[in-house]
Image (tube, rainbow, N blue to C red; front, side, top):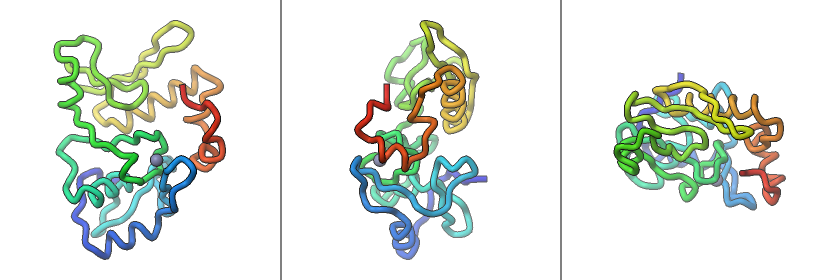
Length: 180
Ligand SMILES: [Zn+2]
């Protein structure tokens, strides 16, 4: 179980954190090189006996403050193992839902295929393919929703390379038109 709450970091934790981060690649991403979550998509680190997602830790270190309650840290680069603070942005569900207040369509999460549904107060996963929209379900947890969106896309598209290849392969293929 990965704790997603903000972390209280000591100087020694910060030093230990950056020792496990690779230098920037051609895309400017700084990849986490140590422990990962069970699905291998997100880095994680133990701080004061609890596991935390490394991109969230990187945000806290870089900004010198905790993540707002209920907010998540979005990868602008779409590389989930990246911990470059410049590639991370804090997104709150509240801010998202205010972007299009009154909308029945829900609002964007910053993650492809995942939108906030203000009626159900849940993340909804929808993926378009061949002119149709497919429902992937409703989720409380954004990262579970993201995983569901990826799984649904992979079942619909056979060439969705970004979701299917590992980060190192993305690095190698950085100049290819991987994203749509
Ligand atoms: Zn990055």
